[in-house]
Amino acid sequence: MRLSVIQVIAALFAAVCLVIAFIAAGVAVVSGVFMLLAVTALGFIAWTALRRAFSKDRGPSSPPAPPSGP
Image (cartoon, rainbow, N blue to C red; front, side, top):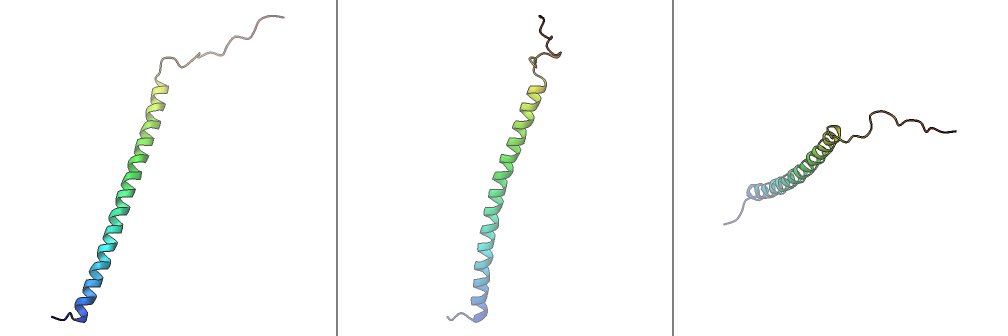
């Protein structure tokens, strides 16, 4: 059975669509990984800032006394 021209064009079109779909899926996976890394980094920054803001040992709240002496 010989393939007609339309069948060959349809097969090539399907192959191109498949390649584009795989590229899009790969981009989506890489984008998702970087999104998770960004969310993790932002969470870490927020957690450290909150931990520092609510910690008990923030240091002296008043400035140190000037040195006494001649």
